[in-house]
Length: 170
Image (cartoon, rainbow, N blue to C red; front, side, top):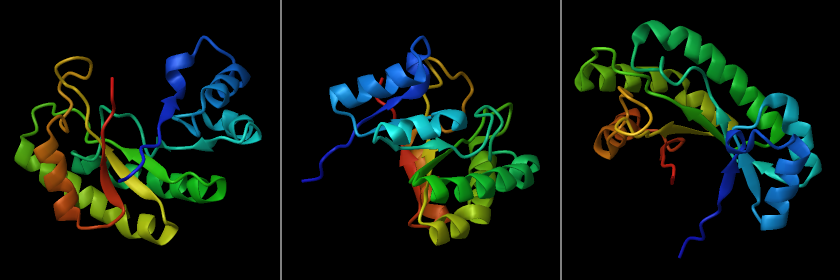
């Protein structure tokens, strides 16, 4: 049986100082935090915590489902892969982006092409690219990767052991 390792998301605790967030995570027994601003990475490490994941690119509404974003996002992901290796961060979060009129079929094709551009670099770095599924009915209207089957198809077609799906529990 696989043990579940939980982490806390940094932005949920923005009323606390970085030190308070880290201390609370340690006191509760969490091994990691995620989506930490880069300037706080040393504080996280000083508390003995791992950084579970960082954003691979931004913004989440303007992602890999648009071919016009591929070059920019590839550069951002490659830069963040280097940082992830240096800091021992095992996951980069990648985003489909909002539909903005793009069909699911076109978005899927574009997403696969975009991830194939960076999958080998992630494999070579030993870093996972995790495609985040988000709830378009609750808090991310129009986000394209809002169904498991769409995300699974992306991962299957990219065909890389370092491209996976990310589920949030909230």
